[in-house]
Image (tube, rainbow, N blue to C red; front, side):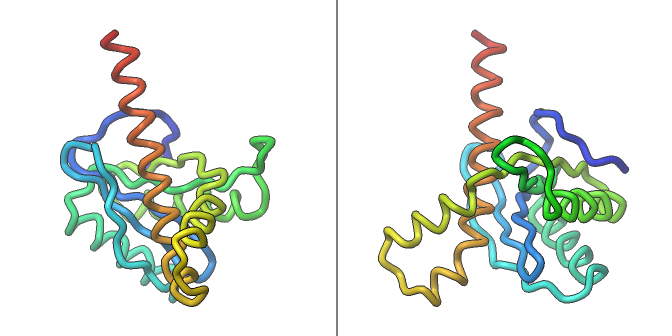
Length: 155
């Protein structure tokens, strides 16, 4: 199965992943694709176990699409982390029955850190929440793009 990069509304919910080397932040949309809800952050173990746990979360949540944050440089070029995430998404696509799509995540982690810092929570709690918040922001950006695309098409 290939990793897609197009914009299209799937049947079912959307599961968004902010993939890091140690943790994977996760968020899921509602059935209508309007809101994003953060899920428990997945602590990484072995790739095979990570893929199985993500597959279980996708199945349990009724996901029709898995969105993987693509950490591009500000120029749009891929760096080492973007290549790592692309390979992770490829492996995930082979493991899942639903499409996997890369989505530009530039600045989501920066924005998540800023939001958490401004909220006044402790550094320890902030570090535990940043991956989940980044996944929520990633999913919200995709849902916003879907809504904008729908307005352009309908309007």
